[in-house]
Length: 527
Ligand SMILES: *Cc1c(COP(=O)(O)O)cnc(C)c1O
Image (cartoon, rainbow, N blue to C red; front, side):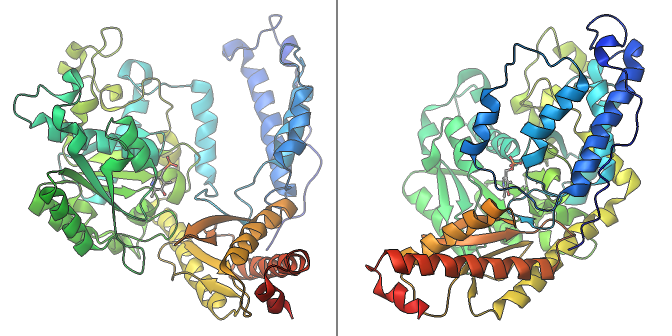
């Protein structure tokens, strides 16, 4: 762990109070306020600089009930008036107790430290405030996004008709995938004029989508939104590494057919959220071809391999997909939100097109005006592409891919280090950059006590702010999870966190043994 000494003093900036910068109460960004803008930005940037330099823990451990009272006294109808007071309040209400993803001991969710060029891009995106949905609001912004879509399509290998659009995240990308798969299927039903105009056909209650048991919950949510219901997602069994079992997939497809259900799509996950497991994409592709099913690849997490020079082949088969989700805000080290949905056949994006006279009339499309809203579920949309653009132009794709490779190596090194630890039980060898494990002392402890112990450990780590780890359940039992996306995290950091896990676990069992004699085996575990 290396934490640089904190420069605590603010750099001296001459700051004109915004309320005195021109017109009375003039707080709008424009040419007249360009100086106030610069001074204000420097103040904010310097605040973040000082904060980040002094952060010693990923979190202070504050509880919601402890924080709530601070907000009770804020009167939003009374302005503070000057920037010093406002920044002071932001520091107190937000920054002092923020969760800092750049800290090496933040190892919980798929939040990444972010590249410097991507942050610089945000400094440009926010004030210009481009809304990227139509050419007439964005001009070059449209082409920057489109070039990145084309770049991603090419890296995946979707072919010359490929296209896509930036989205708010993997959830929206998966929703688009299932929507298009549904509407594409229904467009082929004889006598049905199409879902877009006529709503769902009578058969819709029998439509089914197959995805592994380890797939992301956004599929269920999407199915509900799409009028198909959670039950339309058929969970397919996994192998011991939490990869979809392709024989089980074939059996489920056949079972659907026998039961007069209509399988329309298979979602293969390239990097499951818990295990980083990559479904056998080539086998899934072959089955999709054979049974004429839409193949969606949810590469929200594993998409980072597209930039890897060492492990791109782990995604072999992704080029057969009909559609793909990629989250740049996970394994491409971009700020939230930055994500994309890609398709093999650009015509399929027509399922979400609506021509509004005031915004994107059909005449504009036939003139060849590139209005991205024609491909998107959103209307007003942030220009999130500039972040990835500046990252690629300054850092380059290879360096970006090397960051992801580094954390995959870290997960494997950490696994080697922890698997010899007699009190840490690793669930499965890591595949991308997660490690699922639990505290499990050598002496026997009843399952329910072990579950409670591991749940306690996570809370105890968070409360002290030593480390933020995630939790998940595996075959009904409580586990802990490291999600590693920070190249600054070392094996030594993780071993240190493992020591703290064992400390909190043992402490809990000691207390538990004293308070619940109903578990004699737990008591024995401590002797
Ligand atoms: C994170 C994740 C999602 C959801 O993406 P968001 O960007 O959080 O909406 C979907 N699928 C997988 C496999 C994920 O890991």
